[in-house]
Image (cartoon, rainbow, N blue to C red; front, side, top):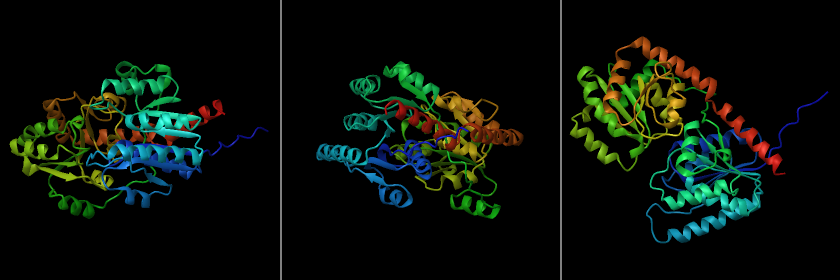
Length: 391
């Protein structure tokens, strides 16, 4: 009788750039927890704490979480020495823990972490590609491609087929160096609110019982396309005056977006909710979810909204089109098109049956294809395969 041999629980390092609220960070922590719960010795590390969340994240993490203190957001000249010290700390962290696998989560951490992992003799070293990188000089793109193509990295993991295609076309990554593993979210638990809790929570955001709440979640940066969402709202409000747009997230564009809302004379119907830890609860308050991004890998916020059963409207940016089938489990609109966004929101608002169907089908799509369990089992299989090859 042949017995299935249990996989060896080898040590893993997951390395990110900055401690901040974002999709890549969410995935790093979720993946760390999944592997930790299955007996793998896991350490999560970041080069610096951008948003002052390190102490909180460390308390909430059942696995070791390390801030390498390699940067200061004030961008002082001393940062060069901080970074060198962080690289030295990272090298010794890798040597002391004898990691079998190191995975890095951003282009920055790919560039910094993978050569050190290679030099320290880590057998399996994966870069990951979560989306287009803004303001990256061509020479750094060339260095990054060399790390992946020349074997300093074992390979690269792209979070969508479209991201894989862009990495090949725009960055020169060899196709045989890339594995596609779509993102996933934790569907083991659901946030449930009774009607009184929902009404009370909506009221705390300035949303009345009769208002239609349109929710958007994402950092206030140019690639998220919030300006186009704001530009869509005057037309929506003209037809449906009892509409409130809640934007959860913070970032460098907050002041300019608030000014844009005032210029459009819609500030009374827009709530800038800031960075939130209660996004799962916010999703339970909303009537629909909108993602206006200009560029995306495969967004976690979109998957979470679908799992919450919300009808979703999203731009057809990169990996989004691999999740949403227009008219079946959501509505797709072109990027940078405020008119199309407005029309889609009005369509959702005017058709209750459509809202219910899209919400139901979207939730089923996430359960079938985009759970964290489904995602991490693919990572585990890939790590095991490569560790055996390099044994």
